[in-house]
Length: 81
Image (cartoon, rainbow, N blue to C red):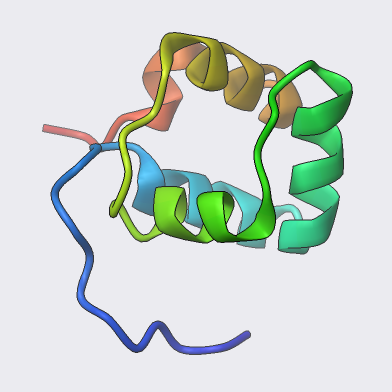
């Protein structure tokens, strides 16, 4: 696992949680990309990296697809307050 070089951005709340979930299930970014694309989410490697780094916004469609990929409720994508 590579260490993130940049600080997390402030464009979304779920990016770091998506990265945590992906690592927890042993999934590579390429695998997550494929799972999202199968669900109709047109995202590339750069977009996913920016999503996880909180450097881009996340659409509601992407949130639903991410929850489906990880088989978690939508609320699980958000950090605990």
